[in-house]
Length: 428
Ligand SMILES: *Cc1c(COP(=O)(O)O)cnc(C)c1O
Image: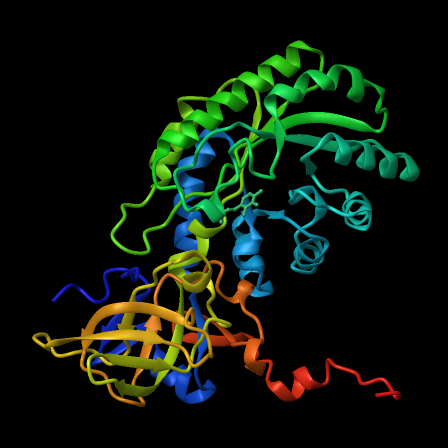
């Protein structure tokens, strides 16, 4: 039998007395209290991940900006802020969330291909550290808005380095025909256009080539390219002093080997470190993924004759990654199986009326029964932030565990509250 808990970090999740715990708290105790499904995060593991990256990157002078779209809960942001992190944001909503968590503008990088005028204005009003600009059109808009405020906007150019991140097509962002960044070949236009824009200061270059990158090679290629472009733009007289290396560091969902902080540091040391540029990275997933699980109840074990389904009370609205990216999340029983328990094959599904509401096919698990609980592992990134109320289902609560304490850090948003979001015009 494979080790059922292999995808759960042992510093955070372990069986004790026959039941799975997050740190010092039994997941059953939280579930009895709160119901299922819910997200559970280990504060200890979040700190451990952050500190591992900080320890590897601090010596190279690399600043960490947590890409909060992976997990934007206020408690998670405050935890990372206390560790010294800034944020990488992609919307005005994330700007508001960062500021509300006490992360001031000078620790915020604003990325994104479609920033609206209102979002740019709000970012400038908050004195963000930099706007990562993705097109000449956006440069002109930022200049205009900065002029209106009578300020000079700190701008970094997001370059499309045309590097294949060798990851899933839907999360590849650094190829020429992806919508992201400014093509390096177009940078010649800067000479004519940008020098006329008086309310911008182009302080650096950035790239983010994709997500769930498992090998250093594409990162090394992108960093190298960024270094060359930074040097070249500096030669042309731009005040380039920053290089933003983006995020995208993969985590093992299944059997992959992870990209370690040490290999990331080696990629940076081999390319852009020690050349006088202020360096930043924007990790999202890798800081939060394995600290989090989605805890679900088994509603039915459905015997379909030729196969068996495990029907959970969690669904694609709670965790959409399997439906959206064919992603895999390991599934682990909360009740510890006997060491020699026979394994049975299940398709693990949610209750939603779409065949894509499937978490795993042909998964071998110990015999399960209705009323049992399972965790979907590695769910701390792009889980809760991508959840929805599809099928008029509740938004699942989020729980943070720290040692022997736990707290609900987002309550369940149930249908009664959701009905209140609607309004019916008199003439209906
Ligand atoms: C999403 C994103 C990140 C973080 O990606 P991860 O794969 O979660 O590390 C970093 N930078 C930008 C610009 C992004 O859009």
